[in-house]
Structure formats: structure tokens, C-alpha cells
Image (cartoon, rainbow, N blue to C red; front, side, top):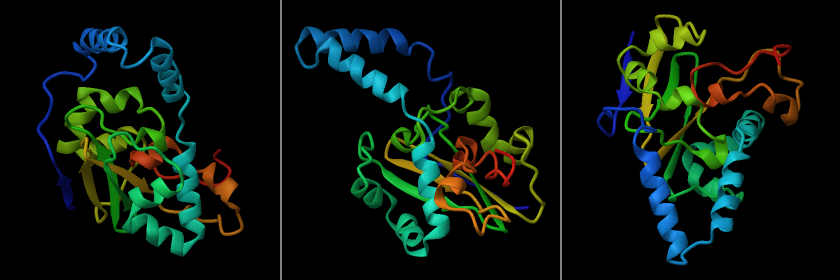
Length: 208
């Protein structure tokens, strides 16, 4: 077993949500007061963020499964490809796509807070932001994956990738067997949010 941890910053002491809400509210009110943004513009932005889903990421994976040239570009320059396709990545981070194979399984975490490619994967799940996940998946990734129902053979290497404000990760899950005749829409339905984070494989046909 070879559990590799790609780590970029230290653990946070507390959950990222604790203590930040009053600061966020004060900054938002100050920006409105100074005329930088209107309250309506901020509310529209919040509503747009709340409407995001992992569907964009699912479509990326489905196309990568069916188009080798697209997959090669996605693996080599994900941020450039996403920008060309109209995805607005907040703070313009580097985006890296990591591929699961027969011998390697990737899982993503943000040990500092909850860095996450929201414009592609939607809002992060609550558990992704919790201290339990952020700390435990680094120390004992196989145990955490098993709690999600993902049991891996001992000869499969587990790589834990630490997202930051400047570098975001997306997992390219393995294509399930028996999907050779499925079109992109059908394939995208097999790609869940958890598969894009790496805590679960893509669904098998018939499991949707």
C-alpha cells in the first residue's frame, strides 16, 4: 500500500464556517455602503452560486471518456479548456484533473478550509468542509473511503490531493464497464459529485 499525500498548507484549527459569518456580513455591508456593489447585485451572485450543481463536471468527464483528444487537453490544461468553454473560475486558480486508474485512486480535500472548483462542481458538500474529513482523509484515507462505501484493493495506491486557493483538483473517475454503447448524456448521469471528489467511483449502469 502506498498512500501519497500531496499537501500544500497546514490544518485549520476549527471548521471553516465558525466565526466567519459576522466578518462576511460586515464586509458585505461595508461594500454596499461604499457603493462598490449593490445589495441586489450581491443577492443575484449568491443565488447564482446556490444554483450550481456538479452537472458541469459530469459532462466534462463523460466527454473525456468518449473523446481522447478532449481528455488529453483536459489533463494537460484544464483551466485553459474550462475558460474556453465559458466557465468562470473564481480567483483564476490553476485546475488540475487527476485520473483514477486500475492502480491509482485519487481523492481531494482542502485541509485549510473548503477550496473547491464551484463553477464546475457546484457547492461543496457539508462534509467536505468539516474538520473530521479534512484531517482524517489525510491520515487514514482508506478508512475514510471505506466509510463512503469505497473499498479499494491493497495494491491500489491512494493519492490525497490538497486543494488551495491557487490550485483546485477534479477527479476523472474510471469509466464503468458495460458503458461502451452509452452516449455522453447517459454517461454523465453516472458521474456523481462524490466521484468528482474521489470518495466514490462512478455509478455502474442501472444504479442511477
